[in-house]
Length: 212
Image 1 (cartoon, rainbow, N blue to C red):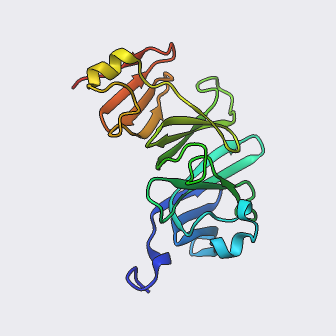
Image 2 (cartoon, one colour; image 1 turned 90 degrees about the horizontal axis):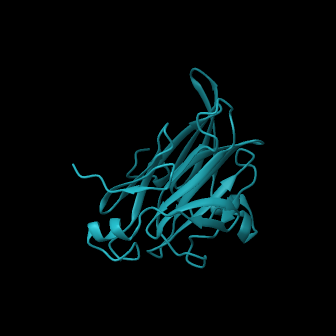
């Protein structure tokens, strides 16, 4: 019953939201919290989500699970590892796992073939005192992207030529440059973790490369 005997007992990611525990392992395990000592588990895999390619789990290796707040409720996103190195597939559900939708943008056959390291959601109107829909960002091996709609992500500017020169690279197309994490602070500064260090973009779209 240990991790050496069942791949589904090897959790790669955990998210707790709205009375549910979501665990990414060999597929997605959704735990409905019934009581203090009772959790009702449901297991979602490629085989049991759908026979339609566009509505099934992209793979059974789920390395990331993230929530995004929408006006209609909570969306659960997954990052799915595939055997072909160099790209990750994404999927999401808007009804607690009843149906899934494949997001192909960063996949092997997508518009931008990329490794997705992190998904980050944040209130679209930060600090206005109103609970609004979340914006969703993907930190990838090909840069920072913002989700607009299915198969439609917009690449974010994260530095200018002066910053890249300071880094010692021509631009972010350098094969060693990757975006691996993002946080947006209460002052709406983008704090972007890259393989070359921290980048900062302020609300006026000024860029900084802090030295420590």
